[in-house]
Image 1 (cartoon, rainbow, N blue to C red):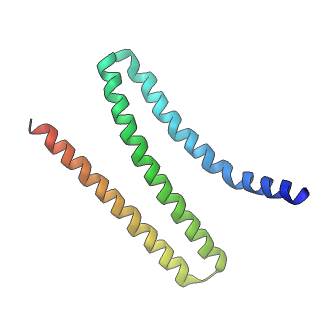
Image 2: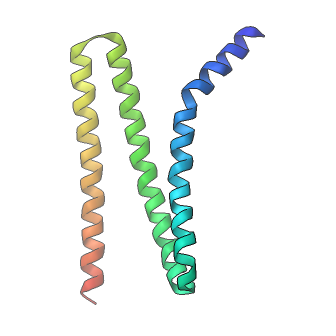
Image 3: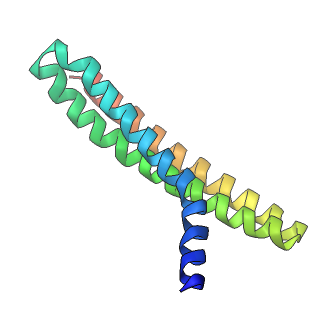
Length: 116
C-alpha cells in the first residue's frame, strides 16, 4: 500500500506543472471570451472560431515542447553529450518545422481573405 501511495505522490509532484500550464492556457482563452462578449454576437462567434483554432495550435505546440523537454531531460540525466545535442537539434528542427507550417497556413488564409 505504501508503494502505491509513494508512486501516486511522485506522479502528482511531476504532473502539477503540466496541469497548471494547461489550466493557464485555457484561462487565457476564457478571458478573451469575457473581453469580447460585450461587442456582440458576431464578434463572439468569430472569437469562438478563432479560439478553436488557437487552442488546437497551442495544444500541438505544448505537446511538442513537452516531448522535447522529456527527451532532453532523459539525455541530461544520462550525461551523454551526444544524446543531449541530438535531442536538442531534433526538438529545435521539429518545433521550427511545425511553426513554419502554421505560419505558412496563416499566410495563405490571410492572403485568401484579402483577395476577396
